[in-house]
Length: 86
Image 1 (cartoon, rainbow, N blue to C red):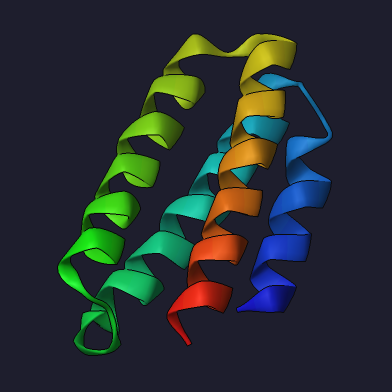
Image 2 (image 1 turned 90 degrees about the vertical axis):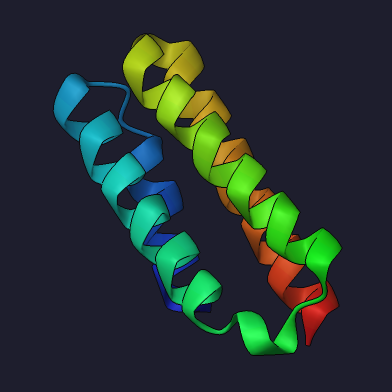
């Protein structure tokens, strides 16, 4: 999972539409993988994963440099959530 987050951050650093879409797709995949492993999460962590997914979707739709920054922040939050959960 850590490699996916690093790849995501690299993609998010490129604020072009293609870079943002790539970053969003990578984050969406990482969140889906985490959700599939919900048996190890409590209800609060599961809710936070859902919030991350919604925030990432909003950032993707926003576009531009702010979206790249927001997606990078979401990746960091995912990394923190997964670290705390295990």
